[in-house]
Image 1 (cartoon, one colour):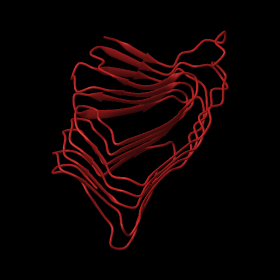
Image 2 (cartoon, helix red, strand yellow):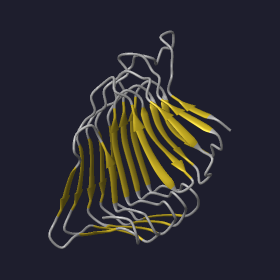
Image 3 (cartoon, rainbow, N blue to C red):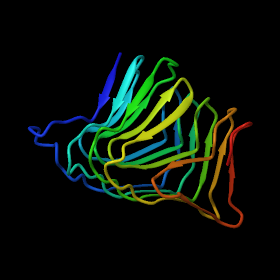
Length: 219
C-alpha cells in the first residue's frame, strides 16, 4: 500500500491555503496501547496531508504549490501520558508547509520521499508539565517538527525518518520540560525529545525535571 500526503494541484480549492494554527492542552491522563497509538497529535499542515497509518510500500510527502503555509503549533501537557505500542510517541507536534505530515507503521518496507512542495512552516512549541512514559519500540517521548517545502516523517520499521524540502522557511522548534515534568522512553534506541527544523531546536529543562532515553538512544 502506497501513501501520498500533499501534492494538491492549483485547481484544488485547498492548494494555496494558509492553514490555521493548532493549540492543544491536556488536563487529564492519557493512556494508549497499540502500534502508532500516539498520546497527542497536533498538526498545522498546508497543501494537503495529515496523519496516515498502515503503509507497506512507498510514502510520498509534499508536493503542494506556492502559498501552502503551515502555522504555529503549541502543545501543553499538564497531565501524564503513557503509551505502550511500537512508534507510539508521547506527543507529535508538526507544522508543515507545502504538504505532508506523518506516515506511521511498523513495516520495515515503508520508505519515504520528501519535498517537492512550496510553502513556509510555523513555530512549534511543546510544554511538558507532567510525566511522559513510552515503552514501545520506536516510541520517542516528544517528536516536534517544523518543515518547509513539503515533507514530515515516516516510520520505517521502528526507525523514524525526517525529511523536508528547500522551498520555504521553517519555524523555531522549542520543547520546554517544566519542574513538574519528565520524559522517559524505555525501548532501546528511543529518545526523549526528537526535533527537526531548519534552525537549531531549543530545549529548556527546568531544575528537578528529567529527560531519559532508552538504551543506545539519547535524551
